[in-house]
Image 1: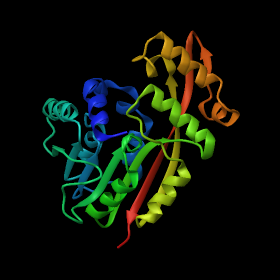
Image 2 (image 1 turned 90 degrees about the vertical axis):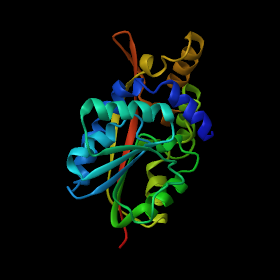
Image 3 (image 1 turned 60 degrees about the vertical axis):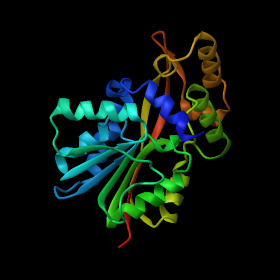
Amino acid sequence: MDKKSVQEQFGAHARTYITSRPHAKGASLQRLVELVEPLPDWQALDIATATGHTAFAFAPHVAHVHATDITPQMLTVAREQVAERGVDNVTVEHADAENLPYTDGRFDLLTCRIAPHHFPDINAFLRESVRVLRPGGILAVVDNVVPEGVAGDYVNAFEKLRDPSHGRCLSVEEWLESYAQVGLELTRNEILEKQMVFEDWAARHGPAMQSYLRALLFHGPPQTHEFLHPRSEDGRTLFHLREGLFIGRKHH
């Protein structure tokens, strides 16, 4: 999975992200602001901002937010959103999560929400995040998480069939280990469950692929079935995904 395919995938669907429920209204968005407790003099950086939901959530609480993405169409929509909302402390810029164009120790806060599973190298993203944070600065990440082992591999394969730009979701254990490896002290972590409507989730595909995905959803290994919790209600197919919320502080 390469960055070009990510740009193509997200460029094609940029406008849908303004109203995408998991991105715009997800429970993790307000929870992230509550747990980070941002301060009014902070300089913040939002990575893989898409149309800017996380950046706009933090903007009222900090001095400035740099909202960044690698997809030009997303940046265009994010800039339109800045203008529409009349926000004067959000700057929209192009930046690669694994090779940030900022000096060491530049930011008090770095956020990244529902995006790392698209990055080719999550550890490179974490190393760069730590580099651009000041000592004591905070990295706050929200991303989909999977169970450990074979069940996690199954969930990742299921996601990748639906969305070829999907790289790999980590397990909670992998996130904790990755934070420790780059010198971040974990101060909070939570798991948030989100209910998905299969018909919306798989809407970009035709009937044949939807049938295949539905079969995978219902007939996976027991641990996967327990994790995804698929069921039919009122003519719709529902299932669950989980988001991990990780807040870490850079050592002084």
